Amino acid sequence: MPFIARIRKDPEVRRTELIDAAFELFCSAGYEQTMIIDIVKRAGVAKGTFYYYFPTKEAILEAICNRWDTELAVSFRLKGRRDTALGTLQAFILQMTLPSQLDVLFEKLCEENQFNLLYQIWQRETKNVFNPLLVDLIRQGNQEGTMQVTCINETLAFFWSALECLWDALYLREPSDILRNKIKVAEAVLERILGTEEGALQLSVAWPQELLGNDAVLFTPQPASR
Image (tube, rainbow, N blue to C red; front, side, top):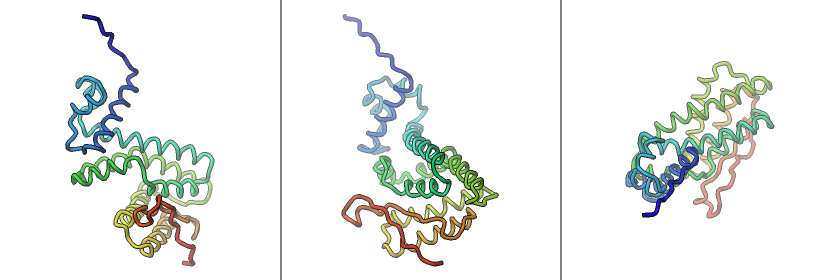
């Protein structure tokens, strides 16, 4: 019987292969229907290898989200070094409404009524990935003199509440006039909690392509006196 040498890969490469395999299966078959044995077969590894990197199926789901979130946060940290805090923050808000590679996965999880799981993962990602980025942006804004925030962590709670209102409007495909009004309200709320000048924020969001029959496009309300 010929000897077949076992291929040894860098641990990070092997971990990435498992994440990629899980992501493909979660998007196609769904999270509930995908078993750990399916993931290791797709990745071409033993079942024990999976448990070396991930204790549970939920852990690899969170790793999928964390990879995208971390890449996004890193890109905006780099942008923050080149742009103003307000400019980076506006770009971040827009990015959070744009279609992403995770959309199909999130839709599958919603179809399976995995809302509690999604919420728990989102809360951890917000705390560990996005909030540190936003804290640094607010501190940068304070130093630049464009923001005046004392209670940063408390301010972030209201920041995410404003974004959630916009996400709800986009998810529910609300009419353009309602979305326009909500964007204006979000601008006013964010300017107030960030201590910026009135009119400093001009938010744009990605309008759902289903309503336009085209790719998602930027939607920015026309400036209006407040």
